[in-house]
Image (cartoon, rainbow, N blue to C red; front, side):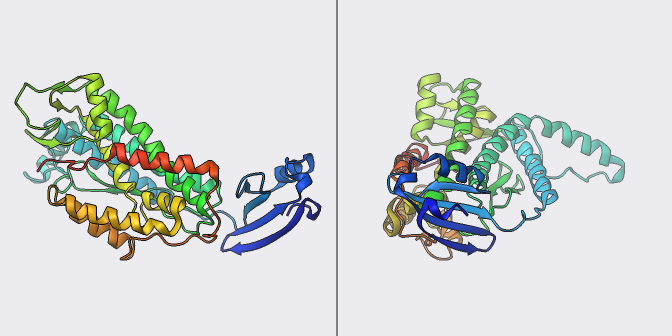
Length: 370
């Protein structure tokens, strides 16, 4: 605790594994003064000004329990398993004939031959796997490291592999768990926005690199902005603002036949937009609640009904609308943070609205033209 002579008053709250001190600093120490700087340097945790230094409201947080023992073997196994299935998805994008598991036809005598052929076919998908896994990992680590900065108990990322027969990219994504409550809107904004912004930065790099390696189809060959090659056929893909801009700057008009790394960048933009929908427990719900408080429910309802409308052109939006309801426990509104009356600091408002713009430029109304 800081010396009482530095503070006008304070309140200490213990929540599970954290001690939270909310204090008002005496006017003469709000510079902060050398004495306050010394006290903050000695504080065994994190601190920030709740509503700007002029108000003198200081929040100090420290852990009161040793770090949780994580199941690193499980997280590593899920990461490696997902890398493998995504790698096989990348091989499909290059026209390879691969399956989630090697063929067992021919019995044990042919097993080694089948396994060797399966490995060789899958290796072609390594660039796609490296690109997409870098996007997913950076997104989740943005959340994870920011949560740790605020002493929030957060799990390492859980990656979800998927059979390529069910999902050609080989994954259902990744997530982290916040196992202790979020204190206020500042924490919610920072944790919620960090993942999409870091993931977007990596996805943009992959998109630019991949578009540079892609080709342009012959005029009239495809009636779509982009084509994703897949096992001898093509999926026709729709644009977001950012994919349209990158295509036109780098290759001009015409349908882009996408290189696997470009597909990874395109998927990264789609993942960013899906997470930034202003619904319940999605990142976009965190951002809008931090900005607007209870008014987030209006944006959430509008976005959810918007998905129902868009489902008329792209029916998987109906599945996403149902899934977001399940993730939110049947609610579209964001649950309250502990100090829900405390306003978002003015320094975080530009970040919030910039993240809303990020959603607008990464959202593709019809991702796949069915």
